Length: 263
Image (tube, rainbow, N blue to C red; front, side, top):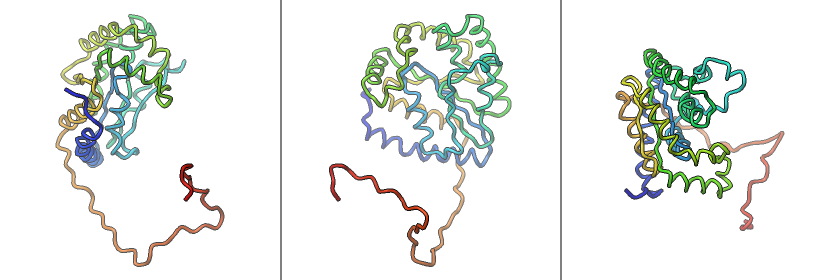
């Protein structure tokens, strides 16, 4: 299929935004705890997909967990410990920009974790996730796929675009030579952690806009009936003319002006 144009994407995304808002309203009303893991290759489009889910939602209810490299202290903890602090409470939606699956992906491929550590993780992860599910958390695991040709194009875009340059790290550069190794690591991970209770869902992100729509549609379809009527709110008349801002201590700074205009 051809890549979606922006206008077509926005037209298809608009009704999904409404459904996402309804999902959040349902979660708040029922106390549901929703957790979504976004995993995949570098440049697959995790950030854009996460923003597409989070954009219409209240940031006080929907949180993004994007953990940095573990500190020395965190490296000495139980592996899952630093992720537990970010689990959702009642009514919350938490979107993980990468997760504990770092151990089965980048840590394994780049040699940051020993084989014994990876093996231990692959055995422990299904047990950990079963505990989350048994406690009532709604867990969704997505893996975003992309061919190396697309990955190369996106790496080049990051290199050339000053606004995206921060996304390109030495680890990303090194990963270019390990595309096939990441494939093998992913397959081993799926074999060990794709369970009935916590299945993986793979989504083609060679077209990132189409991938976002596919992911959101799948997420919404897998949730229970989320219809909750919005709270009835009325705005009575002010009863007077609208007031203007008044200042006695400080005044707003001068407004920004387009250099090409003189008005």
